[in-house]
Structures are given as structure tokens and as C-alpha cells.
Length: 171
Image (cartoon, rainbow, N blue to C red):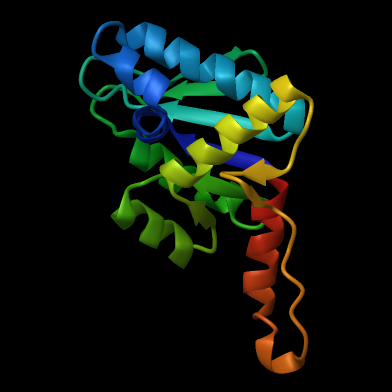
């Protein structure tokens, strides 16, 4: 699965990174990339994180690879949201976009991409890393990730909803 992440949205959703951002912004980004690298190693997903570089970034879009995670800094004058919109067609049927920006999420969903908010993904990320440290996997916030057994056609969710749930279970 391919996961495209709005970097600063996720950074602010993870308390450890958010607390560090005010003191050491580069250190907070590095910490997030380290956590995403561990997540990539555990889950095997292709992870791309995009940070804003529009205020004082490079004149051109900057790409880097760190710990198995593709890191993109948008070019000066461009926001990360614009880069994510351009990538939406690549993610539409094979992955998930992580953002808390409602306008961006709505636009991406209209393009056919599945979106999860940063707080929910942050919880899943932390649970996966904690589960790996403890040697177990599959629980988020004390709730099992196992699907609920529903019976009968009247309770069956739509095909699109089932596909989205399948992607969420695999995060």
C-alpha cells in the first residue's frame, strides 16, 4: 500500500514530535521520519511524507530518501497540499492519504483517494510501534482491529466502504 502524508499535520498530531517542534523544528521532522521509517520496516508500506517548503525552501521541489521513507519538500512558493493534490491520481486506488486539512481531504475524496485524518493515523502509527516494541500487533487504543461480524445483506456496507475498511485494517 502507498501512504502519502501531509508532514506537518502528522507532526502536530504526535505529542512527542509536537513538543519538540517549538525547540528544534528539524529535530522534530527527523523524529517523525525515524518513526515512519520504523513503520515502513514493520508494515512494508511505501511511505511518502511531504513538508511545506513554500516560505523559505528550495527554489525547486526537493526529494530525499531516508530510512525507507520518501521525503519531499515543496518548492518555495508552493504548499505541501498542492504536491499532495498532484499525487492523488497515483494514490487513488492503491493507497491512503493522511491529512487533517478538511478542504484537501474533500478534494482528494472527489478524485477517488481514500483519506484518514492525522490524529487517527498517528494513533495507528504509535500503536504499531508500541506493539512492535512489546512483540504484539493489532490493537489500537485498547480496541481490536478485527472486523465486526455483521450478518445479512441489509447490514452489509457498500463495496467502496468495504474496500476502505480493508485499507484501514492494513495500515
